[in-house]
Image (cartoon, rainbow, N blue to C red; front, side, top):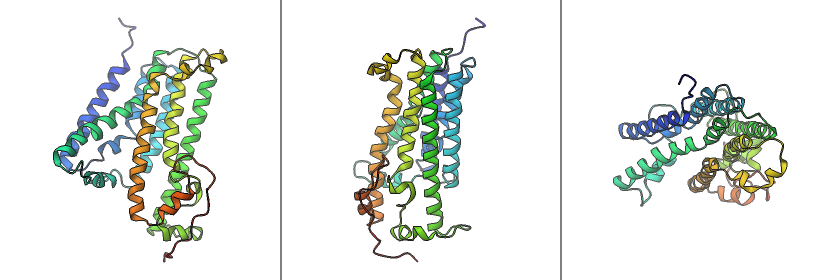
Length: 302
C-alpha cells in the first residue's frame, strides 16, 4: 500500500477539467475569449511536471519536464511583454471570428465557446503532453539515442521560435516607435508595407508557427524512445513504432495551425494590400529559399 504510486493521469485530467471550467466562466464574466491563450504556455508545462514528479525520479520524465518548462517560460515571457495578461486583452482574431455569419448569433457563438474555445483547446493542451504519459508508463527504461535526438530537435526549434518572436517583436516595437527603439534602416520598406519580410520571415511567412509545431512533434519522439529498446535499429524502420496513439496531440496541433494560419492571413491581407505579393514569393510555414524578390512598396513610411 505504501509503495503504490499515484496516477498522474487522474491529476492532469482533473487539472484540465478545471481549466475548461475556468475559461468558460471567465469568458461569461469578462466578455472576452483569450483565457485559453493565457494558459497556453503554462498548462502543458504543469502537466509534464506532474508526470515527472510522480515518476520516482525517472530521467526521461524529468528531461521532458525540463524542456516543457523551458518552452513555457519563454512563451509566457513573449506573451506577457505583448500585453497578453492585461485586463480586457484578447486575441484580435476572436472578435473577427465572432462576426462570421455562422457564429454571429449569440447561441451559436456560445456553443462554439463551449466546444472549441474552452473545451477543445484545453484538451489539446493536455494531448500534446501525452508522450509524458507514455514515458511515465515506461519509467525506469534507460535513455537512448532517440531521447538525444528529441532533446536536440526540441531545443533547436525552441531557439528558432525564440529568434522569430524576437525579430517580430523588434520590428513591431520600432514600427510603432516604442521608447528606446529606433527604426532600422534595412527595415524601411517593411515599415512601409506594415509587415516583416526580413530575417527569418524572408524564408517563411510564419517561422514561429512552424517552430511551435515542430517543438511538439519533437516532444512526441520521447514517447517512441521510451518504447524502443535502444539497440534494435531495424525496429525503427517499422512505421508502427512511430504511429503511437500519443501522437494525437502533435497531429491535432499541426491541423489546428493550418486552419488558424489561413484565418490569420485572411485578416492580414485585408489590412495590408501588399501581403498578397509577399505570399507569392515566400513559403507559408516551412522555411525555404525565397521564390522571388519582394516588391518595393508603393508608399514609403515616414
